[in-house]
Length: 310
Image (cartoon, rainbow, N blue to C red; front, side, top):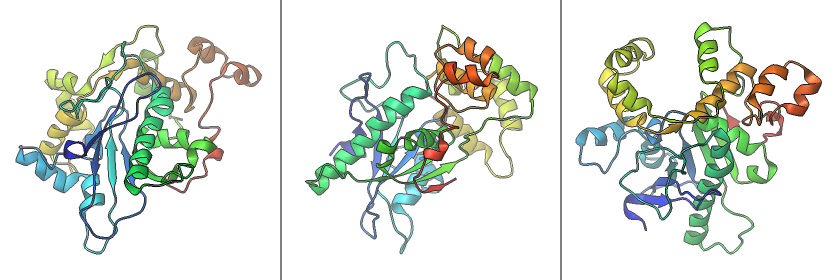
């Protein structure tokens, strides 16, 4: 078994491997189906698995005991059901930097979008969990792999909507829980949202963005973030400081944010448009929109039939 519960996904279609941590309950009433926790767009595993139970830093151990959803699901309760919990990181994340797989964990050049998470990362992660279960339980019927519970925060839940709309893929899902995961992006004409969606409009050039490093290198902006974004009544300042350092330390392709800009401009959770400029111009013409518009997960949500708590 890999050291400290670390696993590598099966290789993705574009030849990378994603890192995952597994928390196996030590006895008790354990659910038959595993749980996979998917983080959000600018986040990594720390959004749902904050801290580290095996780190030499006592503070990280205490954070894990107090704030980690993975800890609660896999360890908590005397009479409660416990879960076999898997915590993957999508491409570009850095929390598991000390652990290596056979293949790299980021493509070269580092250009990807939300579509790559849906079509490449998620299938590779789920397949690894299913193969591990089949091997451990020595299941002979490969046509009925174990179904998984999916818990997704923000974009992590959006990926579940998109993945579960496909009938073939939905067979892998036992149930889905989403936390703050939008399917509609209609806004009230906010100037800041409109400005951001224009600045992040799809471009030919893509760069990587590390929000954690940016905030730590720009103290004034970080302080403004702490003052105006963080709820002082519910989040301890020191905890949030630690989360910014750990949870935002990721290399995110700007194309991911450009795709989110498309979501906001068109109020549509959709694939990355082949011709973004044409989609911007012709989106309001219904007959033309159907021809040039990308596949819409928002419009196909009716195909999602997996039990959902949102």
